[in-house]
Image 1 (cartoon, one colour):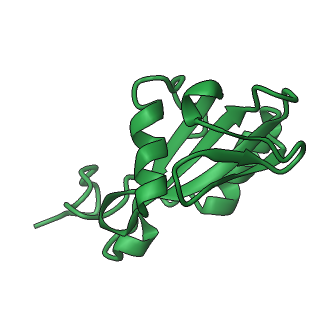
Image 2 (cartoon, rainbow, N blue to C red):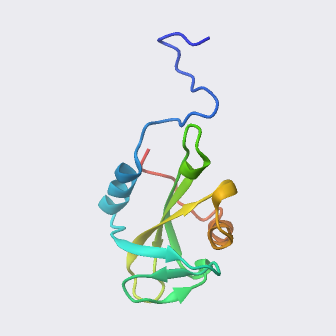
Length: 121
């Protein structure tokens, strides 16, 4: 049973109350101001230059995983990537886990291990 001064986080509860908007704001403050999107076939499209490329071609900046307390739809990853064509720094938001599309899963697998330590926590 938890006490008021207990600092442990119960299982299934996010470790903080950071909102998606706060995370996106932190990424924006680091220069990730553009929009990127995942295509159905697992490529990433830059909204600035409209280039589609495999995620391996994008430089990976920051990554932040967000977990909902009980809703799998809240399992999101925010990725800060740099377009290999135009150099735009942008963010892409993907689901992970059971709600990830095949394209999102492909992107997450491709960038695994390439993220810089998160500075938004």
